[in-house]
Length: 552
Image (tube, rainbow, N blue to C red):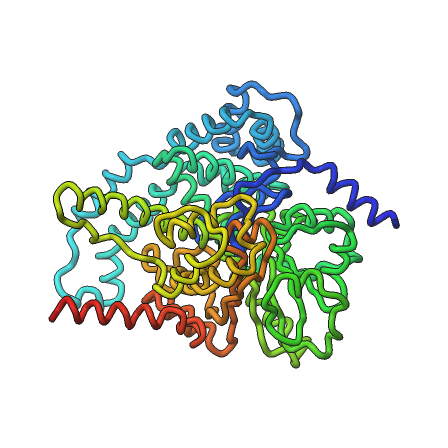
């Protein structure tokens, strides 16, 4: 083993072995592994943390000993109020180190003080609004078209509007702006926002939520694609950078150095967004496999050997995208990264014409199990209602299984006890040992309903008019379409637990990306292949027949 390999191995082993509650890349966007802990974001994405599961983050250069809270609070106030530029850097350093040294509880206390004590002056805002409403607007359009005279008439409006814009800026903006231009400040802001998100997960504090919104908008501006550097990760990169790729891989954990080298070798690519203010650390990175066709299982991507010659590849498959910064949750860097990579691959490899993903469906099993459990409860309630009142309360009842599907499942040998097919299906899918995957009869019986219901979940289950599944929402809003649903594509424990082993191919058709993205944004329309829609066509026909029966 060479020195580079040894350094990567040792450093990675020295990192805390976190037990995640969920992890996501925008491709998988809600995955679990034994390396990263993640925080959920607003578009379905999750990001790994480095805090050992506490929701609190430590700077590598921070002191081990916790500082006095009042001193840290005082340094924060100085960082906001001080005007002496020659000592400002030292004050910002002092605040950052002091903040990193605080316990989770004291950090949250400080964030509440920042959110409430350095908010905007609403009394001033109200006075300025009264002034603005009291101004007399000129009658007609003639005064506005008379050159200098119109400027004089509107000068009072301009003055109050300028003052109002300034008054609507909270005082804590000063801290954000100063940290952004301070060495290491962007990383500090990312950690600070990660703490804010962790706090909001447990308690909805309106002032802290406003703080988060304001900081998020600032970060979106500062992290525009023009400010980011697209870098191809190779085996020749510094060991410190490769170690971060291993540590922050949030979709398919990198098992060993041979696995890492394979992902950076022939037929594979890894691209990252870097920022000058956070040197040597990828903000987000994507892994690409160059294949002859769109892969249907993750085994084809990770384990099949050897890779094909790159000159024979026709498909660039995005199989993992991960972020190293929990504080950037909700900032869609993945969208820009995917588009940049598509452009780059098209330029360097004209023979690659298909751009697709192989993505998990992280919310599918959670949704399905909840549906099965609720239907079981409704069935019991309906039976009780019939026995006591003679009536039926079946408004919300739904048999998730078609008659043929239920019949096939009920005829399987060694089925668990259950009153109906849905109850049996629920027991099979909630088995910790996934016994159903070891029986060819169960696999045959469960495939039709699981695939059909998966198509329904992806295409029809919505939240605020958009796809309920976070990964689906991410790709659809970026302009992809749902191409294919793949049975037993990820047979790992994680894959079976999250989606019954099913994965999905999203395809980015370059000529339709903007069209599909706009249709999804404006109406929630989901573009999908005929094969995917075919799974739910029967359900739609059945629903139409039910409506006709009710009308008649």
